[in-house]
Image (cartoon, rainbow, N blue to C red; front, side):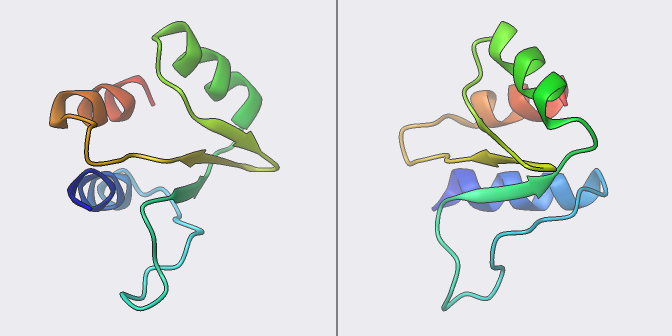
Length: 79
């Protein structure tokens, strides 16, 4: 789906390691990426009304077709 493709591409440009599968036959809309302080980043994103899930050493975003380009860009800007 386009929002997750945009998110993966922009995370790579920000030098964020993506942990979810990148192979076309294995990937989904879920994007898991490393974060040095997932708890703090989760709280920062939450304060901007951006919903992600905090994991051990990573964050999980689940963009879907109803997410706009602006929402994906907002998540990336807050990171």
